[in-house]
Structure formats: structure tokens, C-alpha cells
Image (cartoon, rainbow, N blue to C red; front, top):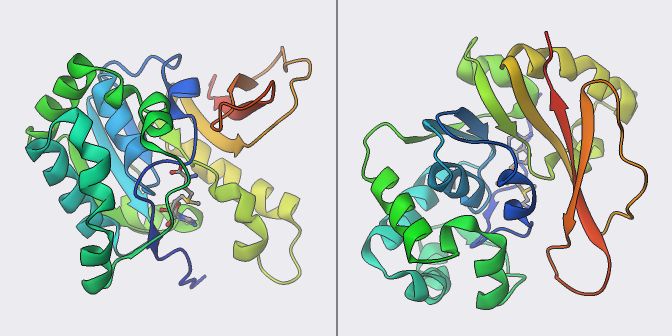
Length: 240
Ligand SMILES: C[S@@+](CC[C@H](N)C(=O)[O-])C[C@H]1O[C@@H](n2cnc3c(N)ncnc32)[C@H](O)[C@@H]1O
């Protein structure tokens, strides 16, 4: 499968990452995540993950990670939003295309644990100074073995990539077939009791949660923070 989409980077997350990640026990966990804004990775590190590997189809993710991590290390918490946003045209001059930011500074701070207060920001900066804590590799979640071999993780985050299943599937394949085909491989990259965040669902109406088995739906405040709607994340836990 050769796909060349998703070459934009996101200045900051468009999800309520705090909403689901804070309850997942990240302490000392090995984490794999897609890149986007890198906020999934930064939140995981600030919440105590041992190591984070970013796997992203976007060839600009590594350069964006170097740039944003450097901004975090050199700017105060309250300066970070403006520092990232004002580098958009500089990044575009270097061939890194940026998506338009969806939220203002207050909302971005509330979606990200690492931006909550001086202490969470300090924790992230400390982690970013560790050589091996954060690595970035270019790859496709539908061909994970090619990039990460048989590595295993305690937490895997797919953000909302699976909303775009139609883009990645073969012409005569259904979205269901596609999920069924790839799920055993994703599962094989989880340690026992490892958790895979499969879907991020925007404005998902709260219904009765799944109570049995390995699938769970976490509901939390919508990323927009507006009204009574919730967002949700579908989580799979590997029981054996
Ligand atoms: C779909 S975007 C959305 C941003 C997200 N809502 C957030 O808040 O961060 C997530 C990231 O997944 C990456 N991506 C999309 N499809 C992928 C795939 N098949 N394998 C690996 N990364 C992929 C994109 O390049 C992008 O960096």
C-alpha cells in the first residue's frame, strides 16, 4: 500500500487528549502514537510514560518534532502557543505544511495536560531532555511491522486516523474487512493488559457504555467545550 496523504502537521491537538489519557495510567509505560501535533506524545511523557515512539505517515513529523520540542525547551508555558503559531510561515518556507489551528490558546491549554500548569510543563521539559525518551519514525499504521518490527507497547494511540479508513482501504474492501484484517496485527504489538486507543469520536452522544469484554468507550468533555455534547474514545484492552 503506497499512500502519500496527510502531509500537514497540526500546530496543536484537535482532541481532548486529557479527557482520555489522564485516566489510562501512563506511568512507566512504553507508548506508540501517531504524530499530528505531537501533543499525544508530549502528554504521555508529562504523565510519566517511560518512552514514546511516534509513528507517522507524514514525512515532516520528525522535523516538526525537533522544532516544537525545541520551542518547549526554550519558551515559557504561557509563551508556547504564540511561539508555535508565529512559526507557521517559517515552517511553510521549509516545506512543512501546517493545518489551520482550530482552537484558541485557552482551549489548547485545557486539552493538554502538559500545558495545565507550571509543574506539568516542567515535567515535560525534564523528559524532553532525556536522550531516548521520544523518537519519531516515518511509517504507516496499516504496515506497522515494516517500521517497528515486532516491538511491543503498553499504550498505542491512533488519534482519529481510523475515521479515514475509506482512504486507506483497497477498492473492493469494506471498512469492516479492513479493520478485521489489521486488528490482529495491532493487537500483536500490545503487551498483556496493554491498551489500544482505536477511535476518537467527535461529538459522540453518550449511550450505555460497553460493560463486558475488552472494548470500552470513555466519554469526556467535547474538545470544543461547548454545550452538553461529549467526545469519546474507543479503547481496546489486551486481556491475553
Ligand atoms: C488524522 S491526524 C488528526 C489530528 C488529531 N485529531 C490530533 O488532535 O492530533 C493524525 C495524524 O495521523 C497521521 N496519519 C494518518 N494516517 C496515518 C497512517 N495510516 N499511519 C500513520 N500515521 C497516519 C497524520 O499524518 C497525522 O499526523
